[in-house]
Image (cartoon, rainbow, N blue to C red; front, top):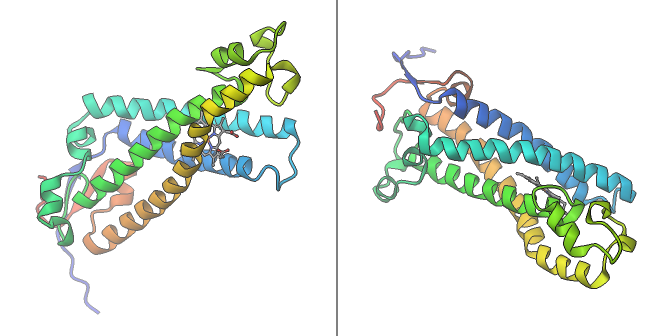
Length: 237
Ligand code: HEM
């Protein structure tokens, strides 16, 4: 069988900040999802309170790396290279409206459909980072909010710095109930955000695979090398 070779042109697209962000984010999300799932099923796993605290400390430690990495990416979207900026990331109503995405076109940056997927993922990741930081404070009294939360719930005669998770004897019952009511919407968003993120991640991996098979471009290796290989003149050239 004859395989027709097309000549390809190499385009620089993803700068080192984008590539490091992407792979650190992948590793952090895998670790956070694994620890998070264990937290969700801690009762079924028969974990002790000390075991749960350890899981949460590990989850939150990965969470800080994840949140700092995400913050850097958001800043980079304002000041970075052209393909890293919001203009190249946020969905283009014009491209979607004209149905450009249905045709086999090649792009140096994201395709119109990929922009929608990336924007949704960034929004959910930001929601996970913000709610996670609130939970770190309200659950195990970790920074940035932990010291204030401990001050809020500490029982009379207990120093806020001595308040510990799973120690009802160290907290004021009424203040603790109020604090639980305050944190409950954050728990809800964090948990459902996790489910939505898992769906988006599957869509993202599937989308990359389909696009690579249909349109080429060496998308996966581009996230390592920074370069795409295109056989047609790109739409966003
Ligand atoms: C993509 C990122 C993240 C994923 C996929 C994720 C996933 C999860 C899941 C599945 C749970 C268990 C559900 C629940 O108990 O509500 C959880 C709980 C938790 N997460 Fe995350 N998380 C992420 C980011 C973060 C960050 C950035 C932090 C803080 C720095 C954080 C702090 C916490 C805490 C403290 C809990 C325990 C909450 C509780 O048991 O009430 N998470 N996370």
